[in-house]
Length: 580
Image (cartoon, rainbow, N blue to C red; front, side):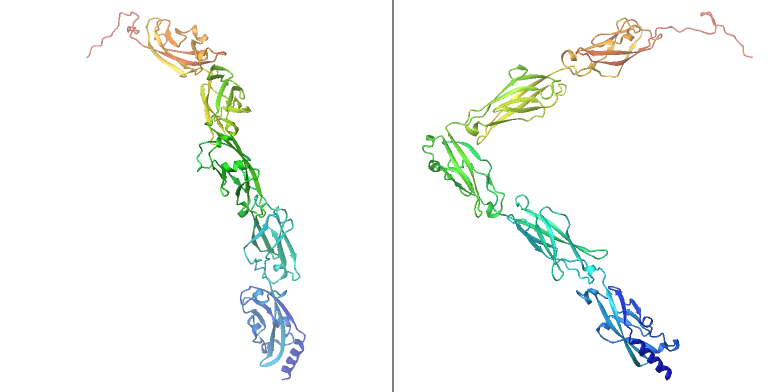
């Protein structure tokens, strides 16, 4: 009994100053070992080993007790998966304190307080309330204009894991990201305008805001920010032409517009809605003869009587947008009243080197850029009806303007007579009347030849067969070559090479016919091989060579004769051996 009491007194004395603290990571599986309370508290140091089993450990059955289990021997384990974010939202440190009851058999001895710090891991990424938002900036907003965007929240408990750094994924010339800290430590985010916007150049911007925590490894999320540029009425209507020059006849149909005006406005919405009006500068007389549809921009003839009393009308048309205040532009419409048809342009072509009134000639070695022909266009109509532009649709020739209604035709790329010897290219000229009238005239160019192609035999080797014993001048055969050049450059002359002439029983005419100069004897020579030569008559002359093989066929022109054994051609010695 005294021994037991001393043990209890010793325990009571020991636990008075014991306070234990442990750390365990969150998200560990249930049953994770935390600590050995009995060993760390040293409560059993003064207890005999044989009596240590009399000392037991337990905890009060409270809510916190559901998080941890302690064995009778003092081993502490987790009872469930611990989530620091659920247990300690927005706390700098997440911890729980449990009270351990120490008993000897059934006798209460002392309570031991144990603090367990639940260490945060970086298991949450920063999270924006939305994945995408839309901001609106106006064209009139100045530099420094700010638009707030939501900040991200990181549910992790520790300062490091929940610390968030913000940045734009890509730098932008028009916008920047402003980050400031509020008194409560939460970041305040703003998209800041760096330069004045122009919706007509770019109407939308897309930014990506990155929120990155301080964990290791770090986690991040993205907020997509679409920026829409709102229109302001900062662009005037623009006519397709500042000046319209049209011609009408006195018999024009009043139900058909004489002109439909075309206007564009880079603004949108009501700022780009256009109406048309006569400017105050338009005379009252012109307004009597013409009507203007305010919505469509169509101009109609309102009256025909006495129209030919005035030959030209000048209309000043105002295009006005629907902005507040509106912006307008002015175009001038010149209406020419004519009593005759609009005339098409007239085209004349003069050649630098002409072989006839309608055809010019060039050499195939002419240089690119050479002046080939002069084009003059005549159109005596008034205004745009008399304004002319010309075109030539061929890459070999090029049309260059020399001034009003005058052009020159130059060579744009080399020509080759053997590929194409003659060109017929349409030259078209069109006036700017309504409707436009067009004329076409043919450019006729003949390409003259130069000796630029070498003659070529049709075969590398010509083979002939002939019999022996034929008379002198017996025909052997023809050799032939081709040359696409014209004139003397394409005229060919054939001959034997000089080294062959003295040794051959053959000759060749200038036009390629080969014949024998003597009777041939196959028994003396059965095959003849030699070379023939062809040249054109150009300057300088070009040439080619080919091989000729003449095979001599046999005729029965020799009698048989004995050569053995007797030297006398008329005697044959025979030995007779009678049979036994």
